[in-house]
Image 1 (cartoon, rainbow, N blue to C red):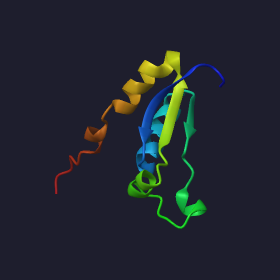
Image 2: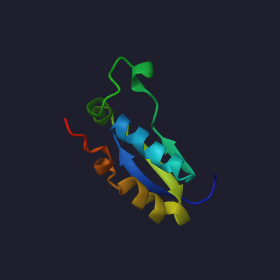
Image 3: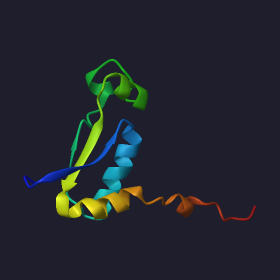
Image 4: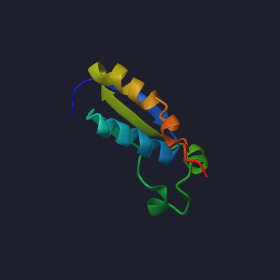
Length: 89
């Protein structure tokens, strides 16, 4: 994947990064991610958003230019309504 890449998203939250990766994988969009190493394995700190911000260790996602708009739409889509509890107790 050595084509022209466009920066899609920057986050400091490892959980958000995992969700973005899952969404892109589900849609079979090729991407490159940098900075996604687990800080707890490499440093004596927590792999948390605040630690990444303090250490200036963002997680960055890149996609091909032709996939950018589609990928942006996919990662910005809010699927939280799929988790609504519609059961009667």
